[in-house]
Amino acid sequence: MAAFLAFGAILTSTAEGHAAGNGCGGASWYALSSRTASGERMNASYLTAAHRNLKFGTKVQVTNKRNGKSVVVRINDRGPFIRGRVIDLSKAAASHIGMIRSGTASVCYRVVS
Image (cartoon, rainbow, N blue to C red):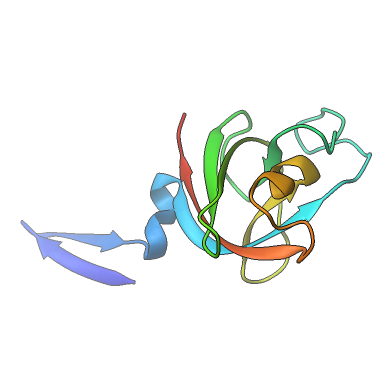
């Protein structure tokens, strides 16, 4: 983490823009039939995702770094809980960016609304 001194105040920058709702890291996909942390039933055919702290309902564009394919998902769950992963996608969202077969991918994400 870098720190800057500006007019007597210390400002810190966060790695990969996490504070602004942007970041890069690992992604995985899941297709459970249980309730999500937001209370809705998980539906693997919806374009949804789990993120550790973005607000439920936030729309996020996720891009697979290997092939450049992107999808916009709605955050409706919490996770992932595995080190190095930044987002868990529904099966449908994972299919859109070509990561079903591999199960995981290196992605970048950014909040779009």
